[in-house]
Image 1 (cartoon, rainbow, N blue to C red):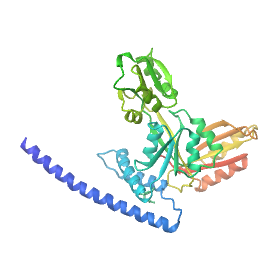
Image 2: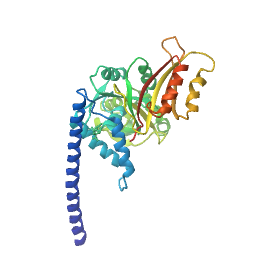
Image 3: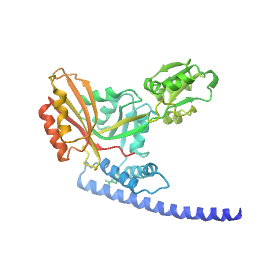
Image 4: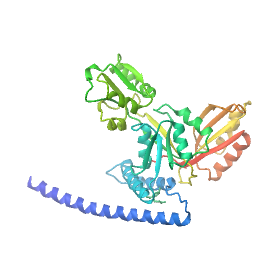
Length: 363
Ligand SMILES: O=C(O)C(=O)C[C@]1(C(=O)O)C=C[C@@H](O)C=C1
């Protein structure tokens, strides 16, 4: 027994020494970031402080160097927060997201920008776009694919009428929990609130465990969590952020039917992002309604061996052309083979707009 306490003291002393080192090193790093800010300002009065391509490189390098025992993602999350604090020291950035507070979109915003960013909830996707366009915030976060908030098409449609650019992406693993408040009679739950897509993602679990409870769809998971506070016979399906925000208890965790349930979010802004080394490009293409149009559009991608990650069709709203395609592919618009493809597609399409080239999501 006596031996272990000696070991414990020694280990804690060692931890104190290491913390001294970490503290000094983080402060030195923050000092460097401040110097970077001065250089950026000297070069340009309207300097852009946030550099997503550099942040992606920093995080990828750390993950590659990491030897454990913490896993690479955990380590990157720590560095994410250090960088977030360094950026806030240069200039705090403001980020709007599809609210209300407690949604998965807020979680995505935090995951991407870290805790030091100032994040502001908006009531609708258009508002997130508008705030960015008006310069009221620096960036926006909106769900786009496989969404739990149910707005994929809406986000795509909003891009059609906007000059906004895509500056990044973030993929979030979505875990749903069954939540109750301290006043809920757990044996008497007769109503469950959630977003329609969350119900869809937890259908099997609900059929097995709550076949008779009424399922009431609401606008967001956070809204569902809020409602539970007021009704003793209700529960909600929502994620960690909403549970924490409304101080709810998890009766059952990770109740989604598919364990790999995830949602992709886009970071929108007014900035063109330089190459990070592992990038994606998103474009929107309008085609005339003629035989072989889709084949003509896709052929250059195939020939230049460009890896398409998503192809989405939306009805055109102008009537001049019939199809509008949203295409995501690997590569940056400044890479010669991507430039070549874009030139070819431009010739074949009625209209082509590059929504942005941006680093592939790291975390
Ligand atoms: O390298 C820069 O441009 C910095 O401002 C430094 C730093 C960092 O902390 O590493 C901070 C903010 C930027 O978004 C990218 C990186």
